Image 1: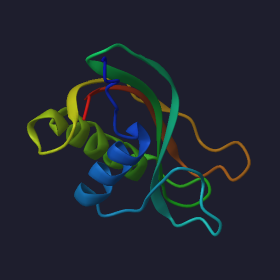
Image 2: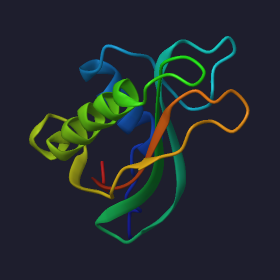
Image 3: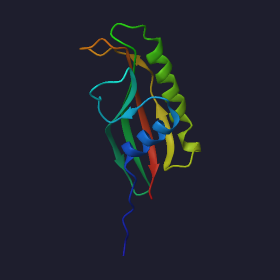
Length: 126
């Protein structure tokens, strides 16, 4: 009999990992009311084979108020990037991480500084 492997919930693992390492909230959707600084983690795709799951994420780093200097958002994004890149060395199912470049894109409605990045995370089966 073949037993199917199961994988941890990728968004839950990444969000919990970041929440434990950052000093700002980490959310799956934009909170209401919105804090001045937070990280948004949203899965945008991926695939699974018998040994690992690849999860593609869009990560948004929000920091500041309308039309504020984007430095705080960039600083937060670099903290997120650094944390993600060392995730495979921590105790969790994350085995490999790739992070794309950072892109400054203020929120269209509020003009709050926001830096976006793409991240790919590979998780081991449980």
